[in-house]
Image (cartoon, rainbow, N blue to C red; front, side, top):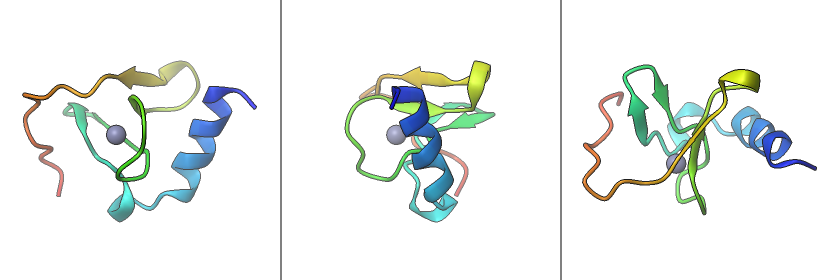
Length: 63
Ligand SMILES: [Zn+2]
């Protein structure tokens, strides 16, 4: 299974309340489960985004 397929599954099975929600931009936040390993990710298909955690990243503003 490709990494993209694995992310699709993670997104599908992770409710918003249990997601990481690290903010990439005002429109994209991490959809992976809270406490996940590796890079943050959001979006589907050609809109898939991955980003490294930034230690000085502002806290997310969506909750
Ligand atoms: Zn994340």
